[in-house]
Image 1 (cartoon, chains in turn blue, purple):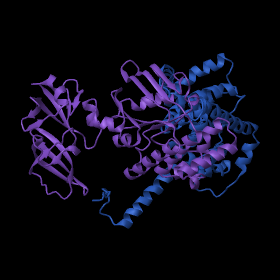
Image 2 (cartoon, one colour):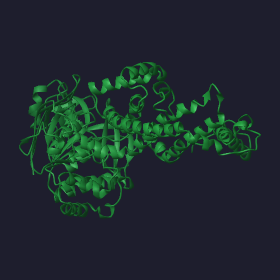
Image 3 (cartoon, chains in turn red, yellow):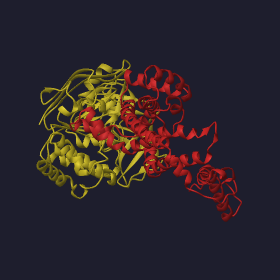
Length: 278
Length: 361
């Protein structure tokens, strides 16, 4: 007898009604997630006087965007965020991929010590890193520099994403690398020429996650940077001043900040889903 | 062209797991040797030590007279076929085949010639542009064979290459490997848990258990003269029947059984006179009907009609025995009592304590 999945709830309702309820639920959930974003976009299009009447104003303007981009700090912050996110992604992938590979393929004291170390760091609440990091950055003269923000990001990525990478490599059959060893590769060669190409979807997925993580990150940026290295998340928050809240400008900046993340998620989605499934 | 020699080879994993124990084995040039045993018997580990994928804890392995203990896999000039094919998923079949040769910096023209030749032998021509994912299991395994073939190595190593294939394909590939070895005679070591594969493919069969070699011999030797009860039970299908019997004057007996024992095993059995030994009878050697002094009665419990023959499960005293090769047309039903006989020369005896073979009559 074939197994038939029995819908428990609403089983008595006619099919059309069930479909309708299902559709409504989906629309409802989408709305729940999309509403803040829609509100943000609307706000960014209203003149300053209209931000408290977003829902019933009729005046729309692109002036906020123009105003925001006349501010050099905002432009600089975008550039900084992009550069830092890209560099952090690049360097953390460099470590994460090989460390995930080591965790997956090699057993022994080195591997288990490394495993223990990142395990401990991973368990420490993210927020509790930031004050010590501030003092370290200060004393090393790294406060408010690219490197001072980059290094903690790379460290966080390594701790969080080595595990994911280990999982990906666990899913790749090691006998492929054994075949490569017999076919004339060194251990490094087998990793670089056989294991790595098979992990490309996973690496792409991880790259997207890393990039978005750093692009969106606020806490480290807030504590570890000052005026010299503005980044977008911090600059956005600085529209809250003693003179008042510039909601329209903040919204315009936020919408601009959404765009690269949105594009990356849109085009990277295929890889993220495939990679995470690997 | 190379002989392989293993001398007192051991493999320890940590201090607790002793996977391979004092294995001695001489494999002649161009010989096809099958390592067979139940899972966990150390056969794959032995193969992987020959390949260089596992370190050797102690002992010595030579390939072509050269000690290879400390050589990396790539320097041993061996080729290996894996259970799950282990094809490079991101490369086309052609690139898979070329991979080993490109590592050796062989000119592309020569690589193409080698691949053409291998593709000819294995019928891979239409597959060369495809990716491994687009191939069936049988095709993938043929590509894996091809990858070994183009390298023209000293030794072929096979690690259960047929166990992921369905029964029909497995039989086909078995023939294909046999044909390949005839066409391109190369020293080969074939690991399998399937005794049929071992028997059909191997020039010699090495039976392993718990990390130790139990017996090395031609398929016929291990079948006809197993050195102990394990080998006797492992080789042959259905498995050999074992009955505990008491040794008497020129015969052995159990409550429902009296069998005359002919020379020369009678002489060997004399040491056990009055004591119990284990009698082994292969299911296919039991025949219906009476042979004077060599018959006994058994009660049929299950009848399995295979079309070509009948398999019987029967009860002999307290022991269950299997009878094979009963003619398909024979009228047997469960509950019947049958007279069964063992022709001379078909009895095996084992020491009940050591499980070693005493003698075959």
